Length: 325
Image (tube, rainbow, N blue to C red; front, side, top):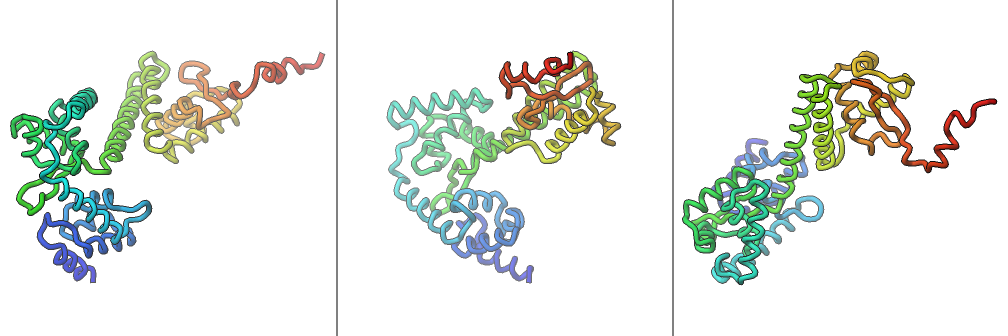
């Protein structure tokens, strides 16, 4: 049955590179509902995985991907492109304000690490009325060589910032910026920050916890870990639970503990205990209303956060104020 379904999907999809049909979209919707991934759906339809992911990202509705809604959205986009194709002025022939914006925005993107030419191509694509441009249109608009445009497109495709699709009639290709590019860029940054945090943690182990270099690396790792967790929608469940378990252990012990003491008491590897303490130390939002503090080199203690109490309240609660005469 599965083989017949796959064969039927390939037959209905037509020539590779042709546009998705309404029947294709019905199958995509049904297979997504079954929990199939983009790669498997692409294999069944005889399409690249990127075609399926782009289709879902661009034509899905507010909720799930629905075939009828996707077909209507794709048709509207195609009609809009046909209406502007041949009438939209190339980027280099736009108004002075538009040209100034393209150059200014491209300069800002170049500051993030893109090459200048790749930045100019990228901005031209996202400001195009049609939503896409051919290589020839980019060459005319930017007044550069075809080789420059080709190199810039290759760079943007490597970063997954630009996609391509057949032009009307399939003789040429049009380049576009996918609607899901920002999500993918966000996830890429999140992964990079997590890698830096992990490398810093490894450095702490090499240079020693509590050493000047180890302390600096621990602070650096905590910073990038915090960014990664916030960009990714919060700390991972395991990391967060470990941090709270370490905090509970310090409260129960009622005395400062070293990383080795905590690891031995909890039956954890030392690396896990150090990571849990690092998370607790650099995530006050996670440990509130308690806070982790360093009681010495490689030694940790827990204390209540006093920023929830006024000076008068803290004074009234000090143990020495209630000692018997």
